[in-house]
Image (tube, rainbow, N blue to C red; front, side, top):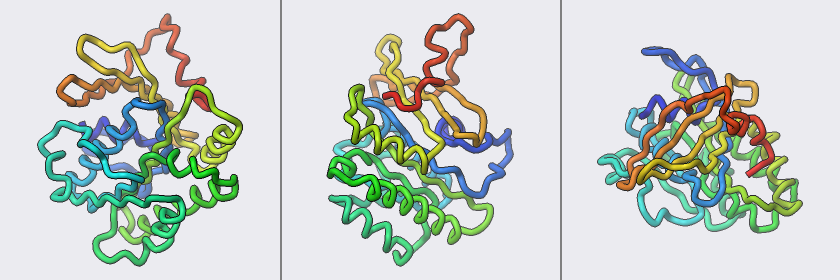
Length: 249
């Protein structure tokens, strides 16, 4: 599961068996999808895997506490033991203040920065320059942490944003701005589920960092998540769905 999660949400070059990723810093990734598409579940699964690998603490930012743990794994029952540090900035102002002071935070340096629910902060009617500043500050914070963890240790930044089928001009402008700072994006699309399953099609657009890839993410009734490569078929009419994802929900 850990390797598949990295492949789904890693725009960098995929490492071979037994090989470490050649990149010291993972390119930042924008995780996009509609309501209920599984963005939070994927982020939490990534946090669990990263913390469980012993790479260091994971910093998980979200506006409000999670009401329930999205993943049904023994590790998910004890996130504090796995060094997942949750922070809940209640507004854009507090989020910016937290990021500006992150370099002063004592303790071990986080190896991964996750932000869930970016749309909740954008809903505060931010001006375009404020959205650009927030995106730039996220990248700068990730770069600072990467420098502190040292060469070869790796560092990642993933930001989740909810999209809507019908967006006003402000939402479209915000997304366009964010795509400039996050050229690598992973889109989650609803897919026809199997019996008792809830399925998503994950389309990774690496933004020039590597090959485009597609995955089938299935959530079982008990909450367990499985990830398998998307079965490519030449006559599949939905095979071009990922290539037209940019700018779409």
